[in-house]
Image 1 (tube, one colour):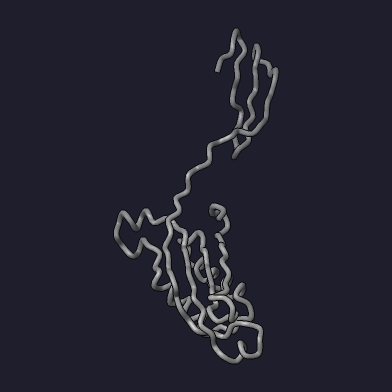
Image 2 (cartoon, rainbow, N blue to C red):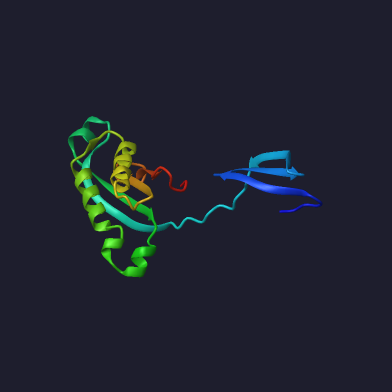
Length: 167
């Protein structure tokens, strides 16, 4: 872009968010600027599959009684992904198969022997993120019989695939 007279600005290089611009005068380099080019954030589509109140029995807890007797846990799973292709095609091949993920989670939970709900929730998130289309998983694990004075105790975690938007 010409500024005035024989001064001329030229974009020398741009890589990622960095750019180098030079001011040339009479075919000689006069000034060079290297800086950050600010770009507006790109909108990332994030749709959610919601699996509510999956119930299973497993060994969970640290007390002796909890280590002997299976307890009921209630699990909620929210899977973040881009459902655009599935919405347009109406084909299971383009969708996240939540039946398959639910089956894998249920099988793992019923055979598990975790001490902490945190560990159980993490393992469920790992199973969900094993599906290549799932970018993010929010997992809630609740133990209804954990304490006598409360209805339930639990944890909610959110895990994301590397390179996906922050939760």
